[in-house]
Image (cartoon, rainbow, N blue to C red; front, side, top):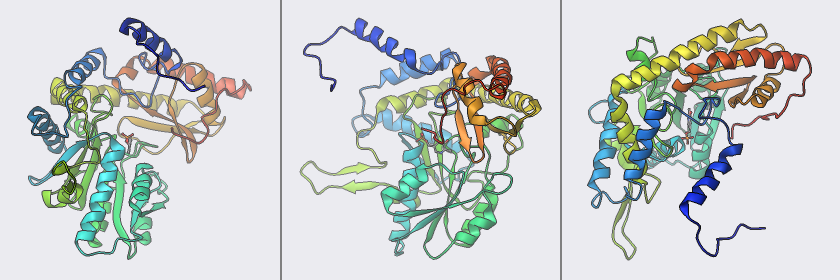
Length: 414
Ligand SMILES: *Cc1c(COP(=O)(O)O)cnc(C)c1O
């Protein structure tokens, strides 16, 4: 039966209790047993995020005239993000609702700029590594473009020569990830940039999960390849605040190399009875809470806070990587350098191991090429990584002994 609107209202206290009870079947993220969907930087950060969100929960960033506060906070958040990514002075950007919207806008802006330059974009193509996020396929689907997915190299990073071989008349955009979601590896952005420049193509760097992490890892001394606007061919970057920015959900940034380029992102319209409307992103109404939350969390942590969180995640990743490499059937995929790692198994099926880990309360993502387990680490995982590793060894034994594998994730992410 369809759930109906109650005839009369219920008091908040009892609703609150019911909502908390509803979560009893959810993953146990507060105890750091979840390594996907959640970025847990500790109780203090969660409190700042929640209170800041609540302070501006009713305000609407669609109206910068009515809410100069939000316009200013968005501008400052964008400028801080640009400051982390070697952005030239003319670079600019916007806050969006998430990585998928940031990517959608990058693809749309690329297409519309090409059109403005007189190109016929029908049948236009974007050429991406096989490890790139489905948000590109979704954007292309919405925008009537097509995607060429190109197999990654033996190191599981974008194969630039293979991507070059796929370029043609209709190509509009190249994509590299920093890092890609499945394996946590940074694609060779410099080589992609050179390729993009040679063919006058738009290179988008998907730094959704690295844009607020890799810069701090580098400040802490990690030797990372160039991946941002430092590479001349890079025209836009997506970077999610609601991942390693530790902001509440609904917050990402899209950055452009120049204002003339971003102009193709903005939609303006006035032929209706309520006057002109200008929207820089895909949304109309834009939640003030997400912008305020981003402003507060970035100022609460500051460079020092982010560096510290990043240091903890990097140490946890290195420790888990070393330990997993020593568990005999397991093999780390590629050479992870940030907060994500993935591993496969030469013995028992990794997805069966995943099922046994789920039975022990651990929730993470999987990879399918090859079959494996993926972990996206947060600062909160430092406290539980020993326990995870112990359970992992036992889960392998269980699978070897034929214990029913439990739930199979199947080949899916969401
Ligand atoms: C998370 C992610 C996205 C999509 O972001 P959403 O906020 O989930 O829409 C895109 N690319 C990468 C590499 C990601 O990790």
